[in-house]
Length: 140
Image (cartoon, rainbow, N blue to C red):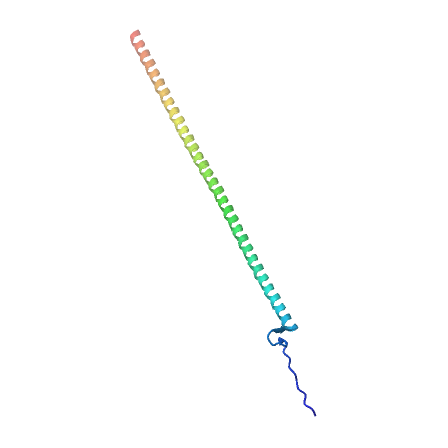
């Protein structure tokens, strides 16, 4: 029986007759193309991920800036309302104080008028009584 030799072939590089320049076989060229495609796909994916991250960061920064602007506007409006409320409260307090002062002044004026009227009436009555008494005394 004859023994059979198993011949192993290398599919990567064969040499030309001159022995100087390697000849790339079909397997090696396919491998290089696949590696190049994988590298390009990886680069495209990395660039896409970086672009998505940058866009997300920009959107988040814009949203945060908008939220800050809205919060500042709301705080300004609340402060304005508080200031207006304080002004309204101060105005109401001033009005109440003015009303109280007016009532006190009116009461004092009424009391003074009543006292003056009473004093005048008393003086008139006393004068009339004195005059009548004097007239009675003189008439006797």
